[in-house]
Amino acid sequence: ASPELRADREVVLAAVRQDGHALYHASPELQADRAVVLAAVRQNGRALHHASEELQADSEVVLAAVHQNSDALCYASPELRAKLMLAS
Image 1 (tube, one colour):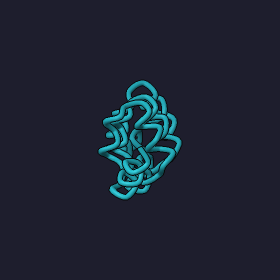
Image 2 (tube, rainbow, N blue to C red):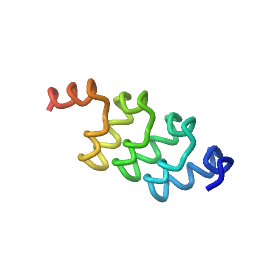
Image 3 (cartoon, rainbow, N blue to C red):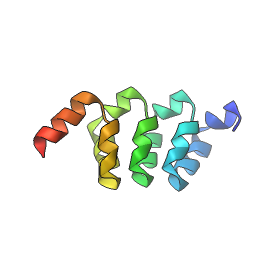
Image 4 (cartoon, one colour):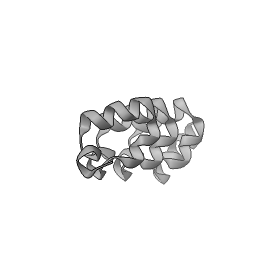
C-alpha cells in the first residue's frame, strides 16, 4: 500500500477490523494510535506484535489482546508481562 494509505486512519481502521495483522502495514503513527491498535488486537490478539512499545505496555491494550489470543502475552512489554504473570 502507498504511504498515504498506510497513514490514513479510516483506511487502516477498516483494514484492522477485518484482519488485525494489517496493523503491520500501518504507519508508525497509527501503530501508536490506541484506538487503531485496540481494534486490531480485538480482531487478532497477536497484532500486539506490531503495536508501538508504548501500547505494548498499556494494560488495557494488552488485556484485550490476551483475551482474544493468550499467545499475545509474549508481545507485551517485559514489565507488564511479569506483572500479569504474577497476578495469575
